[in-house]
Image 1 (cartoon, rainbow, N blue to C red):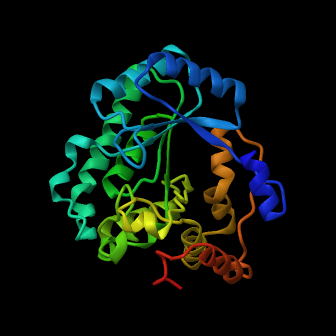
Image 2: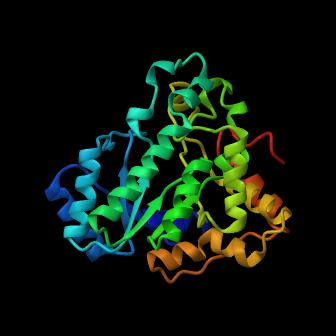
Image 3: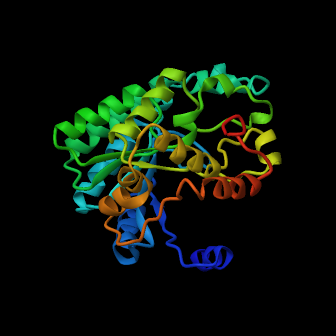
Amino acid sequence: MAAATVAEAVGNDIFYGVYGGVTADTDQIDNIVSIHAELFPTVVGLKMFAGHSTGNMGLTTIELQESIYKSLARLGFAGVLAVHCEKESEMLPDLWDPSRPESHTLARGPKAEIASVADQIAFAMESGFAGTLHIAHISTAGAIALVRAARADGMRITCGATAHHALLDDSVAGTPGHLCKMNPPLRPASDRDAVFAALCDGSIDWIESDHAPHTLADKHAGASGIPGFAGTVLLIERLRSYGVSDRHLGQLCGLRACQVFGFDLPVRVPTTEEHAVVLEDARNAYPWDPFASIN
């Protein structure tokens, strides 16, 4: 139904898939693995939140996270497990002050992501997990280095990055109304530059929008997440300006994901000539644009 609704709105057929969330319930894990096998590619893979984000799906203890990998190994799951990596024990929640939106970057600092990525790699390797570990919306130089090292050791591991982590930094995190608040938060410029460079050199497998179409009321109430489509369009053109080839852009915009997930889908990247129109449409679709400072 969702795919049909979106296709009707945009005027052509599109692929619409979802992750199956994993919980601490062993029976639920058994069921979601079976559902993935039955409904793939509509259910594209599984997702685990190794730290709380929007919603209440965080599996925050080492014991729970280890148990997920052991269960998936026992079941012979060979698909993609995407993980939101922020380690709760490395967060500093007392630093969060809603009157200072930039404090979110301190409360959920880079160490939380780096430590969580290290945990997931260790759990996957030690459990005999047979699938692909995907680190979602990677945002730090340290986490990128861990993925590179695991890949060099022969592990099946991928990572994606968002436009906001590749183009924005924590200097805009204090934007009033929590309009630049997301999980993981914006990082220092050095991490932003590392994410952009890793998109250029192929260390990051694909671009992710992490699109969260919150209303302004949601944001003013403190919701995490931003509309990501305009940023994705901006990122594609910025990568082009840095000499990234159309071939590599195709990989970043879907071809690599198709290879990893096992899809057979057409991928089309907006051309430079289409850039302005596509960007205007993306910006006009929402009541605010977190990328307004970028042309």
